[in-house]
Structures are given as structure tokens and as C-alpha cells.
Image (tube, rainbow, N blue to C red):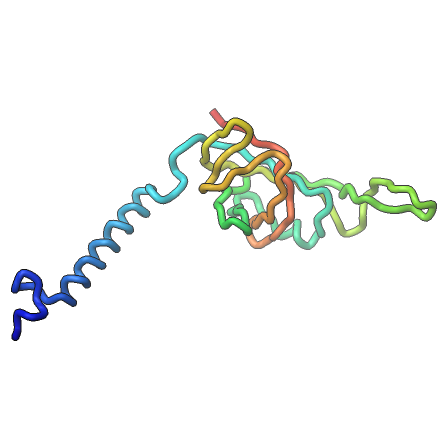
Length: 158
């Protein structure tokens, strides 16, 4: 009766499955530590992001060196390497009904750059399994700030 729940007459079935699960966990850990599942292979890429109108209280939370990632796709887009802040470019309708571009109080424009690793495509880049192109709008997390922003530059860093 004791051999009924044993594999090869020696190993308990439950113990066998626990050992298999532990081996799989160790293999997964080795892959993660060695970077096989991360985006460590490829080319160095500099991304430029631009938003023409962002609340000043959001811009105040963006810091140089902060982690940047695509909040929708959960893709790491590297670390912030450059921040440029200027007057906002807000579209405003005047009293006579014409459209003008003007600075809006308590808003600014922002240009961010990050450096990450990815693969160059014919017309864009692939980062973390997602394709990115100039002109794409993404929801960007820059540190603790969240900005709806446009990709305005992609360059391969040699």
C-alpha cells in the first residue's frame, strides 16, 4: 500500500511536484538575474518627449534621473537625462473667435529625454516588446508625475 503514491517506488508524488516547482523557480530566478527576461540586449536609444501644456504642479514633480515608463503598456523607458521647461503653447480662442497660441497661466511646456535599450526598426524602435514611433502619444510616468506626452525624437546612441 505504501508504493501506491510513490514514483519509481521511492519518491512521494507530492514531494516530486514540490521539487519540480522549486527547480522551475530557481531557473526563473537565474533568467531574471542574468537579464535574459529584461531588455538588456539591443542598441542604446535616446527618446525625446514633448508636451506643450502641462500643469506646473506636475512639472515640479519631474526630477532629473527619475525612472520613466509607459504607464499604459508598462514598458521601462529608461531614466530621465534632460529636462527643458518653457512657456506653454496653449490654443486659446479670442473674443472675436480666432485661434491663437499663447502662454497659459500655471502651465508650462516640457521636453524630456531618456536613454534606454531597444531595437531599431525601419521606422521606429522596439522597446520591451512594444513599438514606438515619432508622433506617438503615450501616458508617461516620470518619477511620480504622470504626463500625456508625444514622442518627438528617437535616435540611436553610438
